[in-house]
Length: 242
Image 1 (cartoon, rainbow, N blue to C red):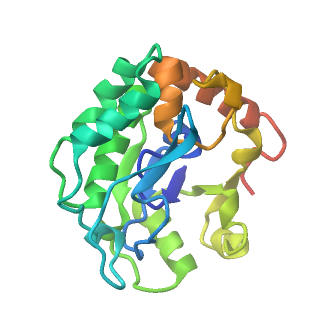
Image 2 (image 1 turned 90 degrees about the vertical axis):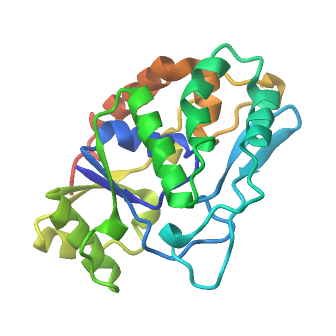
């Protein structure tokens, strides 16, 4: 089973679940960089509410994700201090940062490389076994959304697509079936797990960066949380390929 997604920065739990659920994760990095999207930023929880954490990038019209460079103004030490201010008092902060700090400080020049490095380390910390590949390194057609998805599946020899609910508007399941590819819909947000968070008086905030759950639960605790949700979802009638 394969999950195809743009390489998000410090992704949310829905992305992390796919690392455990799938045999292959294809980072869709040969599409246009989206200013204000999730490719170079995500959200954390602080004492004043949610806050964006952003990797500054250099921008030019029409640039693709894998062409997007990290700006010289990026300061990893300042970034880590921001995370420490938000989560330094959590039980698993040091454990989480042992995984997340090295990619930030590795000197990556390109955003896609930083995000991939982060995903490799998150995958390993969660004990996942999926392979991670870049679509920019695959022989894909330049255009045609469905044609490209089919080719990614064919190139990676995957016959089941783990598809987020956001793809329902354009994913042609009939065309995929004709190509021998079935779809397993991943309705993650409605079943987003609730776990202990810092700043409890604010109530629970869903869809934050993985750093939030990693600091509050630890990697083993987060793995258990994700696997429990995955097992429950797969046991339901809609948790089967179509």
